[in-house]
Image (cartoon, rainbow, N blue to C red; front, side, top):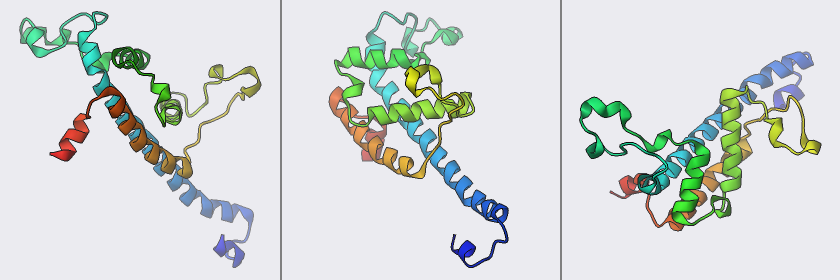
Length: 179
């Protein structure tokens, strides 16, 4: 903008072109933060759900290597990562007697998960079906914002600590860090 004030750009198109690069870099960087935070949160949730999943009869089949009849049977091995996200949340909430929605940061991190899935599967489009009739905006897109990226970095730490506290467990990640 200083360069514009100094008269470096002849017209609005030249200014817009100069702004595109840094703005796009911010968007890409913010998206990277969204994706990585989403991956970290999902990893922690799967880890927290592991014990309730192992005890659940709702997911039949061998869940550990010793349960296999032989290595030829390896394709039948079930893994916690096979559980859909909604069922994962249910396993955690019922297995640990908590509500994830009550943990600080969950709401914002859920919004980030929705945005990441929109970026991956719907070209960033907001799923208008999840909005109230007065809020529907056909063609509305999620945007990755720098300020939001900083906010979710702070909330991620807060949420994970709350999750560990609520489930009386320490993450595998935390165990490795402390070793």
